[in-house]
Image (cartoon, rainbow, N blue to C red; front, side):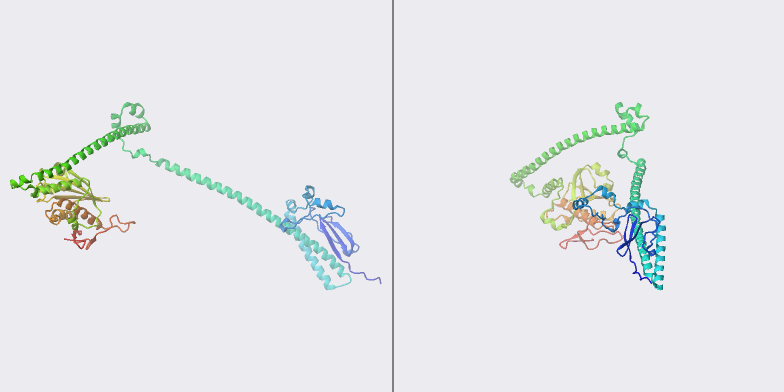
Length: 517
């Protein structure tokens, strides 16, 4: 028998650019090219290797796997040439195998068929190897090695298909991302256009509803305009048939009228300043006259003693002098209170006298809230009439004062009218009547120490204090946010009493609280 040969070892040496090389042991067994469809050269029948058709494309490692491209230098290249090839060589770069470019040329359907075929071949080879191992035999090792080599080639094919699939996936994601960006850009542009459309629609809606400022101006009627306006402004032949030009002409006429009124207003202010200066001069004269009267009174003391007529001790003269001083202070909005009368008033009140003027008897009679005094015959021509205005915030209390020539033996008479929310007088508000009673009926409490010449200013001060109590005890709407308009500073035992809900107007000294009478 011939000697038994050692099992041959088949090794796949290279698989690049579609070529392969197989060795058996240390000698060359066979070589071939992928897709050639021919059987490789072999020393024995077991070395036969059939390779499936593959596209003939340059081969390189996939960039997705992060491997560096390698170029195997030839043995004849000098060392200097090796250094040169380290640099970028366009010709050499073009020889690199690019799977990304290959993906563009390959058909995914054929790759899928190749994948299916390779898997089937692997299953077949694995089954044959398992069968050969189970049967055993002399040539089983050689056949197993051959099928193992074929299996390695199929595994390399699967790895290549896997890389190509990943490249396709990445390109698909990039294309999807690019398409998404285009869609996002188009969507943003659509949103901008929709916003512009909404803005234009809003402008179109607001256009007919536009209200010009001239509509708030109270213009003269059209008939009055054509009667009073000069022809160069009215231009009847143009404006009669054109509402727009007519409105412009009426506005022009309104402007001219306002310019004239403004000029008259400036002239009135100038006259007012002159009159005020004259008043100041007269007041200064009256002040100096008071000093002169005092000196005359002092110089006439011997004559008064000789005639037994001490005018400096007469109550009426002293009362008139005190009243004159009070009027001088009231003209400036100051209510003078002497130190011996401070105990009559609370220290916490806000209302202040803002106006004190003289009014005529005819004006007093025309007031609707003074009819009771007029009908009672207490408003005669010999009396003097004054109007005092007391304010706290938006509340305004108007007091009409009747001064009898017999003052201070005959007290003053106050009639009140409160303007806050609505107009309130003694005819529609019981508390206004109670305030009038505090200053008219209870006046003796306000005379102070003898001789009681400060009655007028004490009554006005009491009136300011009563307005504070009236406003502080008003019911506050808790549903409204923010602080109270009139916070309560004075202490009251009871805010209301009786069915008329009367307020506590009586001031108790020295306890410092208010109570009902």
